[in-house]
Length: 188
Image (tube, rainbow, N blue to C red):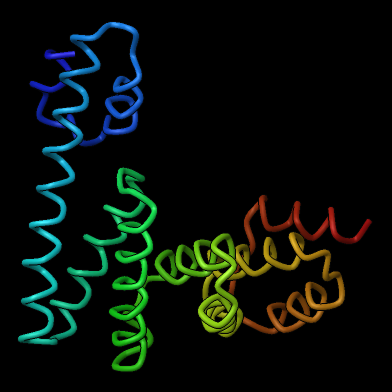
């Protein structure tokens, strides 16, 4: 465990370290728990710094930096449920701010991430906003096309899927093998 924590890229192994907290070996469990607690504290401090910077100087670069950081920490899945909801709300607010300022500078993966998280959290209003963003971007982005296709599939909405596909046919999006497989699957 100590060898893992000494590595430069230890943060890429945070999921493994988190699972070590429940180890039967008390020493490993202790080191892992201490590491996770320290990591959470570092994440929270850095998030607060970036949020303060963004609020004082809401430039596109500051907003994008904050969004990238907070999305990474939410994806790390280290926080308690109330903290995760709080950070997800911060991510939503910053992403909407960036989207309103310059829609093209909001990364597709952030919009897709927010859509999925709010759908899973059954937050209909927020999910609906990001579903519409994804749908609107589908003609420009393969990632958005696939995310919206998965959404249609999850809801069993063949009609919306084929309307979506028809609109994308007239766009410049080049479909990959996975997207073509979705189309074949839905056509059955």
